[in-house]
Length: 207
Image (cartoon, rainbow, N blue to C red; front, side, top):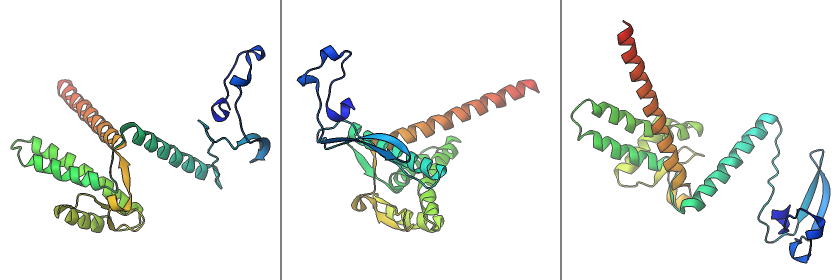
């Protein structure tokens, strides 16, 4: 409430004063979803706010809550870095092309690992097209063709499964979120491969 009204929190009533008071046009107590809630309105310089979520069932409400948290997290990351990249799988497909190109310069067995890493990036546009109820193979084929022509902002339209210019359509991802997601996924895979290798070696000793 202090953040909302601009008031200062004090430990004693003797410390109150006009400088410690906040302001609001209206403060009421209302019944919201069967519970009494204090509602503050008319606070132009508020540093806090409330998002009221509703859903027909607990599972629906949990999904809405998760979506709002994701959106707020992405917004926070955007303010943190101030940079965005095209969404819809555009970045992932561009990364796939770059990583796959690096594999051609490797002559030993590491080439297989590099190509596997590159193929993993294609899962993002594939899943986006699949979630849109479209053929993921057709969407990926069209997306590859656009990127091969140099259209690196081409991404999957999550509503139709078609290919759009994500930058022009306003489908953008915060750079910080994208970077952290790729770093985290890479760390997990590296850990799994390391553990698997350790188990394989220990198994040889057991034999």
